[in-house]
Image (tube, rainbow, N blue to C red):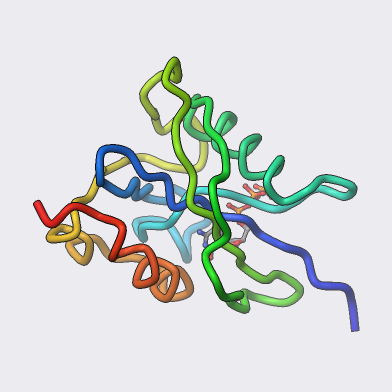
Length: 134
Ligand code: 523
């Protein structure tokens, strides 16, 4: 059996809202919403991978804050781990530069308005309590 490869994803929080990103690829995932992120590269620590993926995919400067408890299996050999994250004060606003075609900042009331990837749902549930109600 091959080693697991960690996919990191960010629950990016700003002003009590959570960033959701709509995937534009591959075809079986496109149109579904996710916590943005990607694969950890060999020798890279997960928090650094998170910062890199957020810069590449969204053009933001951000940092990991805390691990969301849990680990969720993806298609072999991948496993999903999630961190809360925040934007640096001087960061640009996120833009869908790569892998996404839409972004939304969701309040707690709006959290389930988007069609999250099934595997992201438990992590989204975990961070719901950190969001503003409106
Ligand atoms: N997921 C997933 N949820 C989630 C992410 C960031 C990724 O289920 N929040 C899945 C989707 C893919 C796999 O994890 O099957 C890898 O994510 P991907 O494609 O975003 O990783 P990248 O950006 O590192 O991929 P490359 O295009 O290969 O660089």
